[in-house]
Length: 452
Image (cartoon, rainbow, N blue to C red):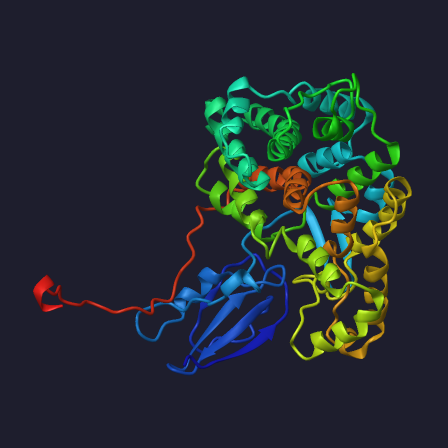
């Protein structure tokens, strides 16, 4: 086992690179002094923004092979510098471009937040009007896309349809691979934000055996989405303003969340300089997984299994004994309240005022109350996350569980695109290619078939 001892020193000039100085110490800069106890050599690694560069470890070697870090799941590895989203998990803070999520959810709209994520600043009224107009006129899809989606089985999962159709868009816009052209990038970004609700709604209608509904560009972004989802024979679909606002807030809350699994997938695939449609399709694929986008469905299954408020104490004991899983609590990043969960809980009131109260709500509220008062969960910093209440709202809006991740993907698209755009313009970024620790056989001789 490698034996290293380290000492941190603090002083100016963090921008200087690491220096190999056997016996070096106290250089007068922010640095980490590392002694390799295998060789007795001492190395000094620059500390910048609370990190050391992994490449600087390569100079530490006892056998001709430079040292590397082993970090499954990237739990303590920074892969990029980003100005898009800030999270302080201990304090329960989430900010888009420096703006607290609470303020954006209360005062902004989804497209205004999308503009903020993509451009770094809140838009002026003319800028927002122009952006909304550009998104609105790109909501329609080529008829061949409709034919492509109609080719799926009647029971195809909407998320699989969304992933496939987004990927297919790269063949409709072959110029999208010209990612170094800013105007071209903006054009593809606008198209993707505009077309995602249409694709999502058509996947939903396909799954229900209903005819596809074309966009109505007289409506707002969310109103248009709801119309494509639920319109039947009426000339114009009019959604309840309270439901429009609630869904708009949900999209805002999902718009970005730093370097999560799907964003990492977008950046990793995007690092090959592929077109944005292919990169976003990769993000959708990552979001498809139950450990990422499917958590709110797991919450609903848990609440149904509990059945009644009277069964909660027994369920809690089952969780403590390892026989049950408490879904919708805890988060990889947040060690405090997920700020999105608090906002969603408030949005429940508006939705249920229109749709009627979901009978699972009482179970959820009582489960939350008991868990937050129980030392077992408090000590482990297990607080409700964004998935705990979002599934209840989606179900109240008549979405089947398989549509939950589609809604998540539509909301996350501006964040994915902001991260992708940042990646494309970051001169430090390289094609993703993690190291591995090889654990297999070495240099074996081929064995003839008869001798195996």
